[in-house]
Amino acid sequence: MPKLSIVVPCYNEEEAIPLFYPAVEKVVKQMPVKIEYWFVNDGSSDGTLTEMRKLHVQDPERVHYVSFSRNFGKEAGLYAGLQAATGDYVVVMDADLQDPPEYLPEMYKDISTGEYDCVGMRRTDRKGEAKFKSFLSDQFYNVINKISDTKIVSGARDYRMMTRQMVDAVLSLTEYNRFSKGIFNWVGFKTKYLPYKNVERVAGTTDWSTWKLFKYAIDGITDFSEAPLAIATWVGGFTAFISVIGMIVVIVRKIIEPTSSAFGWASMVCVILFLGGIQLLCLGIIGRYIGRIYMQTKKRPIYIIKEKK
Ligand code: UDP
Ligand code: MG
Image 1: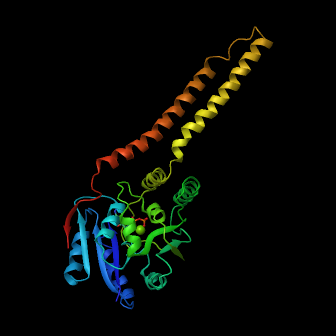
Image 2 (image 1 turned 180 degrees about the horizontal axis):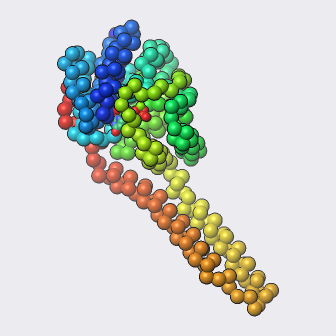
Image 3 (image 1 turned 60 degrees about the vertical axis):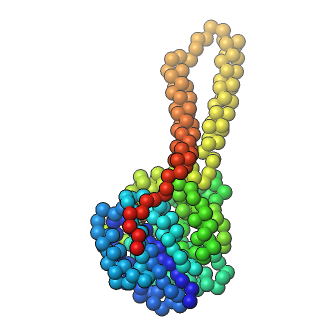
């Protein structure tokens, strides 16, 4: 029988794990696969690790966990889980049951035909989510799909089942700044998306504020596109062009009307501030990329394990 690994990154999910495990068990019992769980405790400050230990004691053969020395972020948790997984197929799920386990048999059915290397889930709505957050998400997908060669399907979650071959490909990308949504698409392979309606969290609260998501989106863009770097060139070229027109206007005006004076102090200050602002913006963009190069060159590990069972 093929083996299916279930990877679950968890951060402060002590309430969700006791609901998650039986809900998944109920579904996978009917599937023709051997199951292995890899829970990743991402430096939780509550009883998440205790819950994992309990499950491991109950079923030491199938339930395993990795516990980090501190919070390294969901991306690090995903990476650690994928590294630990030994299955022929690997599925990544959130602990809060927002990734409904009912779809596992359907995902497995599609992937086991061998026609697809990956079966992912795509939300078709964002019920229960703040309007502003949804708006920002939509804008993010618009922007990244315009400026990056790596296309990201709108609404696609990290909830996906992959073949061993694809998991190995994902693991071969050892970059420090991990943007999985991009990485899953970058590695290629044939992916099928199953649509589903948004489900709200069963317990606990999300750790992703709108601000955190915004920063995550900016990271995604800088990781998968160099387009922001081109902004300096375009804006610089454009302002140079405008300034040439300005010069012509000033000279022509002087010839036609020799007694006219300059436009004045206020306009001068505006121009200086405008250019200063653009220069700082471009420096900031370059700085972001340099910061990421800096982190990458340090070659720090993506996570540090304190306990593994
Ligand atoms: N998560 C994690 N580390 C973090 C934040 C979140 O491992 O620093 C986990 C979390 O426990 C959950 C999954 O990532 O299983 C998705 O998080 P959440 O439900 O907060 O995000 P959302 O579903 O709102 O995108
Ligand atoms: Mg969630």
